[in-house]
Figure 1 (cartoon, rainbow, N blue to C red):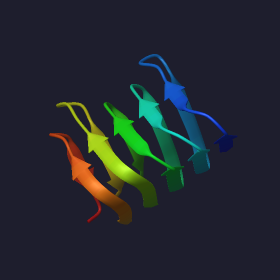
Figure 2 (figure 1 turned 180 degrees about the vertical axis):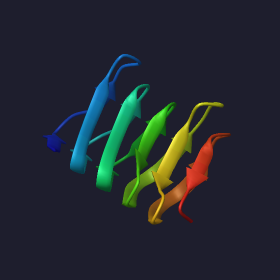
Figure 3 (figure 1 turned 120 degrees about the vertical axis):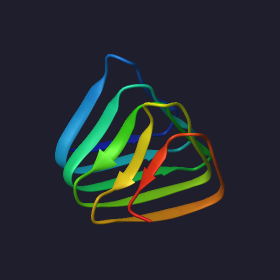
Figure 4 (figure 1 turned 30 degrees about the vertical axis):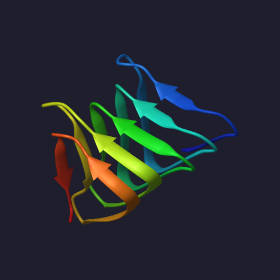
Length: 100
């Protein structure tokens, strides 16, 4: 699955964005309250900020790129079981990070 926007991307709490190979690219911010999941590979990029409050996760490798990443809440999971490349100037939040 590939999603590219020249604006913000918002995935609601009822939203499920699922694919085998998943690429998400936003020119501004990404806000995820739902499930943004990949079976084998997940790449998420935002020019500014990524806000994750639920699942931004893969069983494979994940690459996350943004100026700032917030992974917040007891249900928040960010990363990849086989590895995570996290490229951000600032990382914050109380959620779980997988693959580092």
